[in-house]
Amino acid sequence: MLKVLAAVMMIMCMAGTSFALENDSRVFTIYPDIRTEKVHFHNRYGIDLTGDMYLPKDFDAAKKYAAVAVCGPFGAVKEQVSGLYAQEMAKNGYVAVAFDPSFNGESGGNVRNLPSPEINTDDFSAAVDFLSTQDFVDPQRIGIIGICGWGSMALNAAAADTRIKATVTSTMYDMSRVSRNGYFDADDSEEKRYQTKKAINDQRTKDYKAGTYTRAGGVVDPLPEDAPQFVKDYHAYYKTPRGYHKNSVNSNEGWNLSAMITMFNMPMLSFVEEIRTPVLMVHGEKAHSRYMSEDTFKRLKGDNKELVIVPGASHCDLYDNKDAIPFAKIAAFFGENLK
Image 1 (cartoon, rainbow, N blue to C red):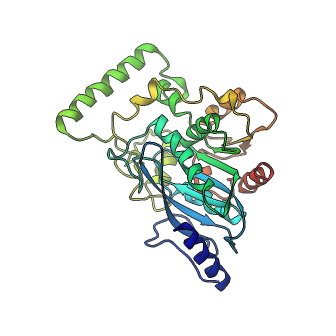
Image 2: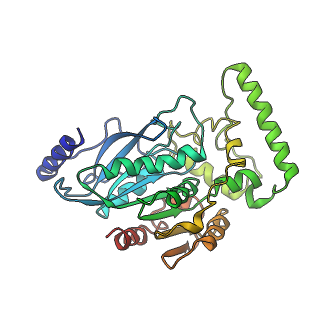
Image 3: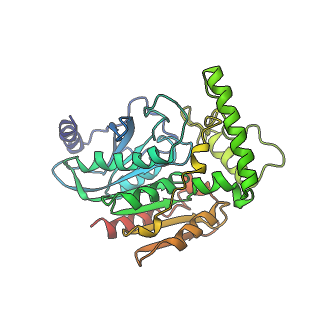
């Protein structure tokens, strides 16, 4: 089917015909010369994943392209930040797929609004499975981009999947660390973790009795007067026309209240020291989450790792502020390492 799709796209490109998504709900500016198509693939758990595939201008199905899989932020969908990043990669000549992770957005998974460090890490490898089997993709030239919480998933995948030849993280959250320790490690004590786990497990019992899952509430709305600046930044993206999307858990009722328990005993990034392939980590100078990238970068080994701190940028500036996101740097990084 995809061979037929590729041939059709090649003809349409030659004819100069626009090829856009049906019922398009993306929240960012669309480039009409970037062809986009809905794609489906599955992970090794049998969960069907849905993505948007972005093709470079003048796409030629007879050629072999370098490709990039993109996911994140944590609680977002492909019509938001990951789609913007994928479109920019296509603009720079890459085949790019922005996908919804398992249990979220248009992807499958019977329990909705649930993260999983194991399954969501495998989602990146599933995207590599898909890309590496397309006739117009060079399977030796595949990279990944993980944004926000999916930055830690991306590094986790890169530590295990040798087919991933280059990795970019943007405004990364170490989801295991922030779940266990709270922001800035303020709750890093066995007693505080115990009380949190007890509350979560009490909630599990209530949910089981009720036959449903209580939601955590998403980004707080309306904002309290004493909200930290980074919460205001989240609200400005997820709760306003700038970034709101009906499928985003952050824009709506949030994750399942008991969802984060899985992060406590399953620390990601345990083997980042063993990533041999190139890694580019990007973070904002003023981002509340900056320490997570800086601390993780110190653990990376080899001379093919780089940390870029964007002057003046906040965490959410790297969601959609094209003046702040170093897309040229990211494209050049892949150009150098996906030869």
